Image 1 (cartoon, rainbow, N blue to C red):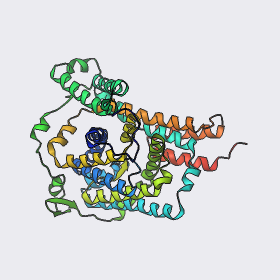
Image 2: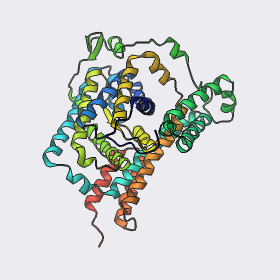
Image 3: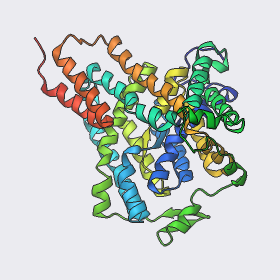
Image 4: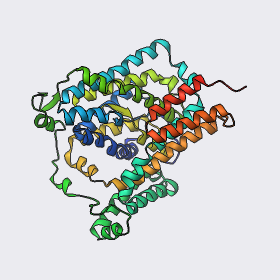
Length: 429
């Protein structure tokens, strides 16, 4: 395989597609399992529903949008409230199902009136900075929360991925993320077991009194596991069982509906931003074909199904968009293989434990590259569209989106502000 662009509808041989799909799994894994850790849900169920949700999404978008769906961060606070504090997984999942129905309602509205208004009211001067924000809003997570736990490992991983991306040949050139993670993982083992970790910590380049990598979980993990097993014990009386699997009984309460469902409007706007990014990277007008309504339909149904299993609501993932930008492999076939791998991981305990043992600093080094590529794609959008930044009106729109987005870390709020400013500010004569 050479470094040529692999288009969305291309099906490359499985022997080549599998490692490409595997690096998508590595890219999404950390964020996808972090959400259930923070909300009291099952990480294995989140993996299962991310894979199922991605396949549902690809079915309804006819494989024309190479996106991976993972756990949405926007729902963390309300899910944690109902699952962890109120110990009611039923109310949490009931609210999540209604959030999925909000997607379906917006789908019907766009289906009836068309999506032509999106390109009209969301020009490049809005799209560009929104795409930039999608990358920059994740910068703190990549740097402060992940890479800073061990800068030596993070930088080694980052440089490895860059090296494979630039000087790699054949298959190595299109799987730099996977190779970077493997290199960082092996280096982490060396750093810890060769006794280098204390010295790095003394230099202030790593978190003190913290183990870099723990391999013990792999040894004790079972080969086959039931991702829903914990729900039978943790939420006894709130689940029903079928073929050894345990599903939460949804409760549709006003409190859960008001706390969880409205967040769907924020994630819908974030999805819009992600679709613009994917369209920019792949040079396809995905708003027109397959249509943003199909995106909402796929994501809405994926969220409803995730709630049925007891998983967090779904959303398109920026991490995987970064992989697309770096590798130039846009094949939806590869993304679907990654979805199947995720489903298998949720059922194979040792594989899941191996991924969970990857140090956060390794993923931090990788995410610096992934999120940076997304931000760079936003700059490219404005350059290629020849956005007039000598215009005071356009500068105001860009400025507000960037500062609001970076300041709040909320892509949805920044996008909404940009759309409203574009509507109300008069064009300069």
